[in-house]
Image (tube, rainbow, N blue to C red; front, side):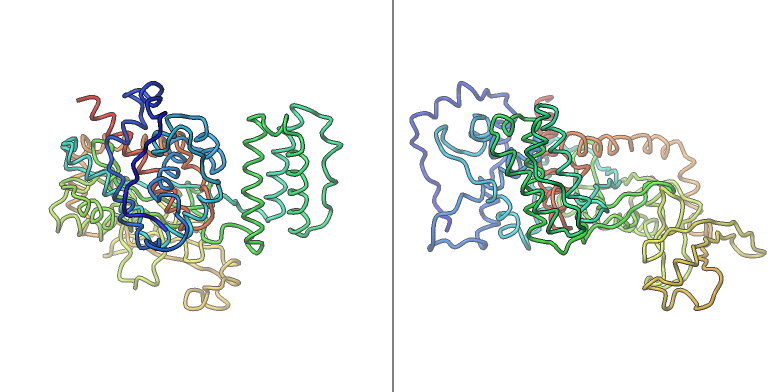
Length: 483
Protein backbone atom coordinates (compact mmCIF):
# COMPACT_ATOMS: atom_id res chain seq x y z
CA UNK A 1 0.00 0.00 0.00
CA UNK A 2 1.19 3.55 -0.69
CA UNK A 3 -0.24 6.78 0.60
CA UNK A 4 -1.32 9.79 -1.45
CA UNK A 5 -0.17 12.07 1.37
CA UNK A 6 3.43 13.16 1.78
CA UNK A 7 4.47 12.60 5.40
CA UNK A 8 6.07 15.40 7.40
CA UNK A 9 9.60 14.55 8.49
CA UNK A 10 10.03 15.54 12.16
CA UNK A 11 13.49 14.05 12.72
CA UNK A 12 15.63 16.13 15.13
CA UNK A 13 18.72 15.28 13.06
CA UNK A 14 17.77 16.85 9.72
CA UNK A 15 20.14 19.78 10.30
CA UNK A 16 23.04 17.36 9.77
CA UNK A 17 22.34 17.45 6.04
CA UNK A 18 23.04 21.19 5.87
CA UNK A 19 26.49 20.48 7.29
CA UNK A 20 27.57 17.34 5.41
CA UNK A 21 25.73 17.75 2.07
CA UNK A 22 26.90 21.07 0.56
CA UNK A 23 24.81 23.05 -1.91
CA UNK A 24 27.10 22.10 -4.81
CA UNK A 25 26.68 18.37 -4.13
CA UNK A 26 25.37 16.71 -7.30
CA UNK A 27 22.65 14.72 -5.52
CA UNK A 28 21.38 17.82 -3.73
CA UNK A 29 21.30 19.67 -7.06
CA UNK A 30 19.36 16.83 -8.72
CA UNK A 31 16.80 16.87 -5.89
CA UNK A 32 16.35 20.60 -6.39
CA UNK A 33 16.20 20.31 -10.17
CA UNK A 34 13.70 17.45 -10.55
CA UNK A 35 10.20 17.10 -9.08
CA UNK A 36 10.10 13.30 -8.73
CA UNK A 37 6.36 13.17 -8.05
CA UNK A 38 5.89 12.21 -11.70
CA UNK A 39 7.23 8.77 -10.72
CA UNK A 40 4.49 8.40 -8.11
CA UNK A 41 1.82 9.37 -10.64
CA UNK A 42 3.08 6.79 -13.14
CA UNK A 43 3.30 3.97 -10.57
CA UNK A 44 0.05 4.53 -8.66
CA UNK A 45 -1.76 1.82 -10.58
CA UNK A 46 0.92 -0.71 -9.56
CA UNK A 47 0.10 -0.32 -5.85
CA UNK A 48 -2.95 -0.54 -3.61
CA UNK A 49 -3.84 2.85 -2.12
CA UNK A 50 -6.04 1.74 0.77
CA UNK A 51 -5.18 -1.79 1.84
CA UNK A 52 -2.22 -3.85 2.99
CA UNK A 53 1.12 -3.12 4.61
CA UNK A 54 2.83 0.21 3.86
CA UNK A 55 5.26 -0.11 0.96
CA UNK A 56 8.58 1.67 0.61
CA UNK A 57 7.73 4.91 -1.25
CA UNK A 58 8.08 4.26 -5.01
CA UNK A 59 10.01 7.52 -5.46
CA UNK A 60 12.63 6.24 -3.00
CA UNK A 61 12.83 2.89 -4.80
CA UNK A 62 13.30 4.66 -8.13
CA UNK A 63 15.99 6.87 -6.62
CA UNK A 64 17.86 3.75 -5.49
CA UNK A 65 17.93 2.61 -9.13
CA UNK A 66 19.12 6.06 -10.15
CA UNK A 67 21.97 5.91 -7.61
CA UNK A 68 22.97 2.52 -9.04
CA UNK A 69 23.31 4.11 -12.48
CA UNK A 70 25.07 7.28 -11.34
CA UNK A 71 27.70 5.46 -9.28
CA UNK A 72 27.74 2.07 -11.11
CA UNK A 73 26.94 -0.03 -8.02
CA UNK A 74 25.32 -3.43 -7.48
CA UNK A 75 22.00 -3.73 -5.62
CA UNK A 76 23.79 -4.87 -2.46
CA UNK A 77 26.43 -2.14 -2.60
CA UNK A 78 24.03 0.75 -3.26
CA UNK A 79 21.96 -0.27 -0.23
CA UNK A 80 25.09 -0.73 1.88
CA UNK A 81 26.38 2.72 0.96
CA UNK A 82 23.01 4.30 1.76
CA UNK A 83 23.52 3.20 5.39
CA UNK A 84 26.40 5.61 5.97
CA UNK A 85 26.61 8.06 3.04
CA UNK A 86 24.62 11.12 4.12
CA UNK A 87 24.38 12.43 0.54
CA UNK A 88 22.63 9.16 -0.40
CA UNK A 89 20.21 9.44 2.52
CA UNK A 90 19.50 13.07 1.70
CA UNK A 91 18.81 12.16 -1.94
CA UNK A 92 16.53 9.30 -0.85
CA UNK A 93 14.61 11.72 1.42
CA UNK A 94 15.36 9.67 4.51
CA UNK A 95 16.14 10.86 8.01
CA UNK A 96 19.76 10.29 9.08
CA UNK A 97 18.63 7.66 11.60
CA UNK A 98 16.32 5.74 9.20
CA UNK A 99 17.07 2.12 8.40
CA UNK A 100 17.57 1.13 4.75
CA UNK A 101 15.71 -1.35 2.55
CA UNK A 102 16.70 -4.95 1.89
CA UNK A 103 18.56 -5.15 -1.44
CA UNK A 104 16.18 -7.89 -2.66
CA UNK A 105 13.42 -5.23 -2.72
CA UNK A 106 15.09 -3.60 -5.73
CA UNK A 107 14.75 -6.78 -7.79
CA UNK A 108 11.05 -7.03 -6.88
CA UNK A 109 10.53 -3.35 -7.66
CA UNK A 110 12.00 -3.75 -11.14
CA UNK A 111 10.04 -6.90 -11.93
CA UNK A 112 6.68 -6.06 -10.34
CA UNK A 113 6.36 -2.28 -10.49
CA UNK A 114 8.18 -1.29 -13.69
CA UNK A 115 6.75 -4.01 -15.93
CA UNK A 116 4.56 -2.65 -18.77
CA UNK A 117 5.75 0.89 -18.07
CA UNK A 118 7.42 2.83 -20.90
CA UNK A 119 10.11 4.02 -18.52
CA UNK A 120 12.74 4.79 -21.16
CA UNK A 121 10.66 7.30 -23.13
CA UNK A 122 9.14 8.74 -19.96
CA UNK A 123 12.52 9.51 -18.33
CA UNK A 124 14.13 10.88 -21.49
CA UNK A 125 11.10 13.10 -22.14
CA UNK A 126 11.29 14.37 -18.55
CA UNK A 127 14.92 15.43 -18.91
CA UNK A 128 14.23 17.11 -22.26
CA UNK A 129 11.28 18.92 -20.66
CA UNK A 130 13.58 20.20 -17.87
CA UNK A 131 16.23 21.28 -20.40
CA UNK A 132 13.64 23.19 -22.44
CA UNK A 133 12.25 24.85 -19.31
CA UNK A 134 15.78 25.96 -18.36
CA UNK A 135 16.28 27.26 -21.92
CA UNK A 136 19.52 25.38 -22.46
CA UNK A 137 18.51 23.75 -25.76
CA UNK A 138 19.21 26.09 -28.67
CA UNK A 139 20.18 23.76 -31.51
CA UNK A 140 17.92 22.12 -34.09
CA UNK A 141 20.17 19.22 -34.99
CA UNK A 142 20.42 15.67 -33.65
CA UNK A 143 23.25 13.17 -33.94
CA UNK A 144 22.34 9.49 -34.19
CA UNK A 145 24.41 6.39 -33.46
CA UNK A 146 24.23 3.03 -31.73
CA UNK A 147 26.33 1.54 -28.96
CA UNK A 148 26.53 -2.10 -27.95
CA UNK A 149 26.17 -3.61 -24.49
CA UNK A 150 27.46 -7.10 -23.82
CA UNK A 151 25.04 -9.53 -22.22
CA UNK A 152 25.57 -10.21 -18.54
CA UNK A 153 25.67 -13.93 -19.26
CA UNK A 154 28.02 -14.37 -22.19
CA UNK A 155 28.00 -17.29 -24.57
CA UNK A 156 29.22 -19.89 -22.12
CA UNK A 157 27.45 -22.84 -20.62
CA UNK A 158 25.89 -22.22 -17.20
CA UNK A 159 28.58 -24.42 -15.64
CA UNK A 160 31.40 -22.43 -17.29
CA UNK A 161 29.86 -19.13 -16.22
CA UNK A 162 29.43 -20.23 -12.60
CA UNK A 163 32.99 -21.59 -12.59
CA UNK A 164 34.33 -18.24 -13.79
CA UNK A 165 32.53 -16.24 -11.08
CA UNK A 166 33.50 -18.60 -8.25
CA UNK A 167 37.10 -18.53 -9.49
CA UNK A 168 37.13 -14.71 -9.33
CA UNK A 169 36.03 -14.88 -5.69
CA UNK A 170 38.61 -17.51 -4.74
CA UNK A 171 41.43 -15.55 -6.39
CA UNK A 172 40.45 -12.43 -4.43
CA UNK A 173 40.48 -14.48 -1.20
CA UNK A 174 43.84 -16.14 -1.95
CA UNK A 175 45.52 -12.76 -2.35
CA UNK A 176 44.68 -12.15 1.29
CA UNK A 177 44.95 -15.62 2.83
CA UNK A 178 46.18 -18.64 0.84
CA UNK A 179 45.36 -20.96 3.72
CA UNK A 180 41.68 -20.55 2.78
CA UNK A 181 42.26 -23.08 -0.03
CA UNK A 182 41.93 -25.92 2.45
CA UNK A 183 38.55 -24.66 3.67
CA UNK A 184 36.75 -24.55 0.32
CA UNK A 185 34.68 -27.58 -0.75
CA UNK A 186 36.14 -29.92 -3.41
CA UNK A 187 35.43 -28.83 -6.97
CA UNK A 188 32.66 -30.68 -8.77
CA UNK A 189 33.66 -33.18 -11.46
CA UNK A 190 30.22 -33.62 -13.03
CA UNK A 191 28.69 -31.62 -15.86
CA UNK A 192 25.49 -30.95 -13.92
CA UNK A 193 24.64 -27.27 -13.42
CA UNK A 194 23.01 -28.08 -10.07
CA UNK A 195 26.27 -29.54 -8.78
CA UNK A 196 28.20 -26.43 -9.83
CA UNK A 197 25.51 -24.27 -8.25
CA UNK A 198 25.86 -26.17 -4.96
CA UNK A 199 29.63 -25.75 -5.13
CA UNK A 200 29.23 -21.96 -5.53
CA UNK A 201 26.86 -21.88 -2.56
CA UNK A 202 29.51 -23.77 -0.58
CA UNK A 203 32.15 -21.18 -1.51
CA UNK A 204 29.84 -18.38 -0.40
CA UNK A 205 29.14 -20.12 2.93
CA UNK A 206 32.87 -20.63 3.65
CA UNK A 207 33.72 -16.98 2.99
CA UNK A 208 30.81 -15.66 5.03
CA UNK A 209 32.09 -17.67 8.01
CA UNK A 210 35.27 -15.56 7.80
CA UNK A 211 33.92 -12.03 8.33
CA UNK A 212 37.43 -10.54 8.53
CA UNK A 213 37.90 -11.61 4.89
CA UNK A 214 34.33 -11.24 3.62
CA UNK A 215 34.26 -7.55 4.57
CA UNK A 216 37.40 -6.64 2.61
CA UNK A 217 36.19 -4.57 -0.39
CA UNK A 218 38.15 -6.55 -3.02
CA UNK A 219 36.52 -9.77 -1.81
CA UNK A 220 33.12 -8.32 -1.00
CA UNK A 221 32.64 -6.96 -4.53
CA UNK A 222 33.36 -10.34 -6.17
CA UNK A 223 31.29 -12.16 -3.54
CA UNK A 224 28.25 -9.95 -4.18
CA UNK A 225 28.49 -10.68 -7.92
CA UNK A 226 28.65 -14.43 -7.24
CA UNK A 227 25.62 -14.22 -4.93
CA UNK A 228 23.54 -12.41 -7.56
CA UNK A 229 24.57 -14.93 -10.23
CA UNK A 230 23.72 -17.89 -7.98
CA UNK A 231 20.34 -16.37 -7.15
CA UNK A 232 19.59 -15.79 -10.83
CA UNK A 233 20.61 -19.31 -11.85
CA UNK A 234 18.62 -20.78 -8.98
CA UNK A 235 15.48 -19.16 -10.40
CA UNK A 236 16.27 -19.88 -14.06
CA UNK A 237 18.21 -23.13 -14.26
CA UNK A 238 17.09 -23.68 -17.86
CA UNK A 239 18.90 -20.55 -19.09
CA UNK A 240 22.20 -21.39 -20.75
CA UNK A 241 22.67 -17.76 -21.77
CA UNK A 242 20.65 -14.56 -21.84
CA UNK A 243 17.75 -15.80 -23.97
CA UNK A 244 17.03 -12.35 -25.48
CA UNK A 245 20.62 -11.42 -26.35
CA UNK A 246 21.89 -11.86 -29.91
CA UNK A 247 25.20 -11.79 -31.75
CA UNK A 248 26.04 -8.45 -33.33
CA UNK A 249 29.07 -7.52 -35.42
CA UNK A 250 31.35 -4.58 -34.62
CA UNK A 251 33.63 -5.29 -37.58
CA UNK A 252 34.00 -8.07 -40.12
CA UNK A 253 36.26 -9.95 -37.71
CA UNK A 254 34.81 -9.07 -34.30
CA UNK A 255 31.42 -9.63 -32.75
CA UNK A 256 29.62 -9.29 -29.42
CA UNK A 257 26.76 -11.07 -27.70
CA UNK A 258 24.18 -8.70 -26.27
CA UNK A 259 22.13 -5.62 -27.10
CA UNK A 260 22.18 -2.39 -29.05
CA UNK A 261 21.09 1.04 -27.88
CA UNK A 262 20.10 3.29 -30.78
CA UNK A 263 20.50 6.87 -29.56
CA UNK A 264 19.68 10.39 -30.75
CA UNK A 265 21.47 13.31 -29.08
CA UNK A 266 21.26 17.04 -29.72
CA UNK A 267 24.16 19.48 -30.09
CA UNK A 268 24.01 20.32 -26.36
CA UNK A 269 24.81 16.62 -25.71
CA UNK A 270 21.45 15.75 -24.19
CA UNK A 271 20.03 12.40 -25.31
CA UNK A 272 16.63 13.06 -26.88
CA UNK A 273 15.55 9.51 -27.80
CA UNK A 274 16.68 5.91 -27.43
CA UNK A 275 15.55 2.49 -28.66
CA UNK A 276 16.88 -0.76 -27.20
CA UNK A 277 17.14 -3.79 -29.47
CA UNK A 278 18.94 -7.10 -29.65
CA UNK A 279 22.50 -7.01 -30.93
CA UNK A 280 22.02 -8.03 -34.56
CA UNK A 281 19.70 -5.18 -35.56
CA UNK A 282 20.61 -2.72 -38.31
CA UNK A 283 21.27 0.86 -37.17
CA UNK A 284 19.67 2.59 -40.15
CA UNK A 285 16.27 0.97 -39.61
CA UNK A 286 15.71 3.02 -36.42
CA UNK A 287 16.48 6.51 -37.73
CA UNK A 288 12.86 7.44 -38.43
CA UNK A 289 11.67 6.26 -35.02
CA UNK A 290 14.47 8.17 -33.27
CA UNK A 291 13.47 11.35 -35.09
CA UNK A 292 9.80 10.88 -34.20
CA UNK A 293 10.56 10.18 -30.53
CA UNK A 294 12.80 13.28 -30.35
CA UNK A 295 10.05 15.42 -31.85
CA UNK A 296 7.48 13.99 -29.43
CA UNK A 297 9.82 15.01 -26.60
CA UNK A 298 9.67 18.59 -27.86
CA UNK A 299 12.83 18.84 -29.98
CA UNK A 300 12.79 20.81 -33.24
CA UNK A 301 14.95 19.16 -35.92
CA UNK A 302 16.42 20.65 -39.09
CA UNK A 303 19.53 18.48 -39.38
CA UNK A 304 20.20 14.78 -38.69
CA UNK A 305 23.84 13.63 -38.45
CA UNK A 306 24.94 9.99 -38.60
CA UNK A 307 27.41 7.57 -40.13
CA UNK A 308 26.96 5.58 -43.33
CA UNK A 309 24.48 3.20 -41.70
CA UNK A 310 21.74 5.84 -41.95
CA UNK A 311 22.05 6.72 -45.65
CA UNK A 312 19.73 4.04 -47.03
CA UNK A 313 17.09 5.10 -49.54
CA UNK A 314 14.09 5.03 -47.17
CA UNK A 315 15.84 7.43 -44.80
CA UNK A 316 16.81 9.80 -47.63
CA UNK A 317 13.18 9.94 -48.77
CA UNK A 318 11.86 10.34 -45.20
CA UNK A 319 14.17 13.22 -44.23
CA UNK A 320 13.57 14.98 -47.55
CA UNK A 321 9.80 14.84 -46.98
CA UNK A 322 10.32 16.40 -43.53
CA UNK A 323 12.66 19.10 -44.93
CA UNK A 324 15.57 17.80 -42.87
CA UNK A 325 19.17 17.63 -44.04
CA UNK A 326 20.56 14.11 -43.59
CA UNK A 327 24.31 14.34 -43.00
CA UNK A 328 25.19 10.71 -43.68
CA UNK A 329 27.69 9.57 -46.27
CA UNK A 330 26.41 7.17 -48.87
CA UNK A 331 27.71 3.65 -48.56
CA UNK A 332 28.46 1.87 -51.84
CA UNK A 333 25.59 -0.45 -50.90
CA UNK A 334 22.47 1.60 -50.22
CA UNK A 335 19.65 0.15 -52.28
CA UNK A 336 18.03 -3.27 -52.10
CA UNK A 337 15.92 -3.25 -55.23
CA UNK A 338 12.32 -4.43 -55.14
CA UNK A 339 12.58 -7.23 -52.57
CA UNK A 340 9.77 -7.75 -50.10
CA UNK A 341 10.72 -6.69 -46.60
CA UNK A 342 10.57 -10.27 -45.33
CA UNK A 343 13.19 -11.27 -47.93
CA UNK A 344 15.68 -8.51 -47.06
CA UNK A 345 18.94 -9.29 -45.30
CA UNK A 346 20.44 -6.86 -42.76
CA UNK A 347 23.51 -4.86 -43.77
CA UNK A 348 26.22 -4.51 -41.12
CA UNK A 349 28.03 -1.27 -41.90
CA UNK A 350 30.96 -2.00 -39.55
CA UNK A 351 31.78 -5.34 -41.18
CA UNK A 352 30.71 -4.21 -44.67
CA UNK A 353 28.75 -7.44 -45.12
CA UNK A 354 25.14 -8.58 -45.19
CA UNK A 355 23.74 -10.79 -42.44
CA UNK A 356 20.94 -13.29 -43.08
CA UNK A 357 17.87 -13.63 -40.79
CA UNK A 358 19.58 -16.51 -38.97
CA UNK A 359 22.48 -14.20 -38.04
CA UNK A 360 25.08 -15.66 -40.42
CA UNK A 361 27.37 -13.14 -42.09
CA UNK A 362 28.47 -13.32 -45.73
CA UNK A 363 31.97 -14.77 -46.13
CA UNK A 364 32.87 -12.99 -49.36
CA UNK A 365 31.65 -10.37 -51.87
CA UNK A 366 32.20 -9.65 -55.55
CA UNK A 367 31.56 -6.56 -57.69
CA UNK A 368 29.49 -7.10 -60.87
CA UNK A 369 29.47 -4.46 -63.62
CA UNK A 370 26.38 -5.00 -65.81
CA UNK A 371 25.70 -3.55 -69.25
CA UNK A 372 22.87 -0.95 -69.36
CA UNK A 373 22.10 -1.52 -65.67
CA UNK A 374 23.34 -0.19 -62.36
CA UNK A 375 26.29 -2.24 -61.10
CA UNK A 376 25.68 -4.56 -58.19
CA UNK A 377 27.51 -6.39 -55.42
CA UNK A 378 27.19 -10.15 -54.96
CA UNK A 379 27.50 -11.50 -51.41
CA UNK A 380 28.38 -15.16 -50.89
CA UNK A 381 27.33 -17.18 -47.83
CA UNK A 382 28.64 -20.40 -46.30
CA UNK A 383 26.42 -22.98 -48.01
CA UNK A 384 27.18 -25.58 -45.34
CA UNK A 385 25.40 -23.41 -42.79
CA UNK A 386 22.51 -22.84 -45.19
CA UNK A 387 21.95 -26.59 -45.58
CA UNK A 388 21.13 -27.01 -41.88
CA UNK A 389 19.65 -23.56 -41.20
CA UNK A 390 16.15 -23.58 -39.61
CA UNK A 391 15.22 -20.62 -41.89
CA UNK A 392 16.35 -22.28 -45.14
CA UNK A 393 12.84 -22.76 -46.55
CA UNK A 394 12.25 -20.07 -49.16
CA UNK A 395 15.84 -18.84 -48.76
CA UNK A 396 18.05 -21.76 -49.76
CA UNK A 397 17.28 -24.08 -52.66
CA UNK A 398 17.88 -27.68 -51.62
CA UNK A 399 20.95 -29.12 -53.35
CA UNK A 400 22.34 -25.73 -54.41
CA UNK A 401 26.12 -25.46 -54.20
CA UNK A 402 26.11 -21.72 -53.49
CA UNK A 403 24.01 -19.12 -51.68
CA UNK A 404 24.28 -15.53 -52.86
CA UNK A 405 22.57 -12.21 -52.19
CA UNK A 406 22.69 -9.33 -54.69
CA UNK A 407 22.26 -5.59 -54.12
CA UNK A 408 22.25 -2.69 -56.55
CA UNK A 409 24.91 -0.05 -55.99
CA UNK A 410 24.20 3.70 -56.03
CA UNK A 411 20.79 3.84 -57.57
CA UNK A 412 19.62 7.09 -59.17
CA UNK A 413 17.73 8.07 -55.97
CA UNK A 414 21.06 8.96 -54.36
CA UNK A 415 22.22 11.60 -56.85
CA UNK A 416 21.14 14.57 -54.69
CA UNK A 417 22.74 13.08 -51.58
CA UNK A 418 26.00 12.51 -53.46
CA UNK A 419 26.13 16.19 -54.38
CA UNK A 420 25.29 17.26 -50.81
CA UNK A 421 28.02 15.15 -49.22
CA UNK A 422 30.63 16.85 -51.41
CA UNK A 423 29.63 20.29 -50.11
CA UNK A 424 31.45 22.27 -47.41
CA UNK A 425 28.21 22.48 -45.38
CA UNK A 426 28.04 18.67 -45.19
CA UNK A 427 31.67 18.39 -44.09
CA UNK A 428 31.24 21.04 -41.39
CA UNK A 429 28.11 19.39 -39.97
CA UNK A 430 29.64 15.90 -40.15
CA UNK A 431 32.59 17.07 -38.04
CA UNK A 432 30.30 17.24 -34.95
CA UNK A 433 29.56 13.49 -34.98
CA UNK A 434 32.38 12.88 -32.49
CA UNK A 435 30.11 14.22 -29.74
CA UNK A 436 27.89 11.13 -29.70
CA UNK A 437 30.92 8.83 -29.71
CA UNK A 438 32.10 10.63 -26.56
CA UNK A 439 28.63 10.22 -25.05
CA UNK A 440 28.68 6.47 -25.76
CA UNK A 441 32.07 6.27 -24.04
CA UNK A 442 30.68 8.11 -21.01
CA UNK A 443 27.75 5.69 -20.76
CA UNK A 444 30.08 2.70 -20.83
CA UNK A 445 33.08 3.76 -18.81
CA UNK A 446 31.46 5.91 -16.12
CA UNK A 447 28.07 4.25 -15.74
CA UNK A 448 28.66 0.55 -16.37
CA UNK A 449 26.77 0.48 -19.68
CA UNK A 450 29.31 -1.81 -21.35
CA UNK A 451 27.77 -4.89 -19.69
CA UNK A 452 24.07 -5.56 -19.04
CA UNK A 453 23.17 -5.43 -15.35
CA UNK A 454 20.58 -8.21 -15.68
CA UNK A 455 19.15 -10.66 -18.18
CA UNK A 456 16.61 -10.02 -20.90
CA UNK A 457 15.55 -7.13 -23.10
CA UNK A 458 13.28 -5.73 -20.37
CA UNK A 459 16.19 -5.57 -17.92
CA UNK A 460 18.30 -3.82 -20.56
CA UNK A 461 15.54 -1.26 -21.14
CA UNK A 462 15.37 -0.49 -17.39
CA UNK A 463 19.16 -0.11 -17.28
CA UNK A 464 19.06 2.18 -20.30
CA UNK A 465 16.25 4.29 -18.83
CA UNK A 466 17.96 4.97 -15.49
CA UNK A 467 21.43 5.39 -17.01
CA UNK A 468 20.33 7.86 -19.69
CA UNK A 469 18.21 9.74 -17.13
CA UNK A 470 21.25 10.07 -14.86
CA UNK A 471 23.58 11.12 -17.69
CA UNK A 472 21.11 13.72 -18.99
CA UNK A 473 20.59 15.20 -15.51
CA UNK A 474 24.35 15.51 -15.01
CA UNK A 475 24.66 17.28 -18.36
CA UNK A 476 21.78 19.64 -17.61
CA UNK A 477 23.35 20.56 -14.25
CA UNK A 478 26.67 21.28 -15.96
CA UNK A 479 25.04 23.52 -18.56
CA UNK A 480 23.05 25.39 -15.88
CA UNK A 481 26.21 25.94 -13.80
CA UNK A 482 28.05 27.24 -16.87
CA UNK A 483 25.44 29.93 -17.52
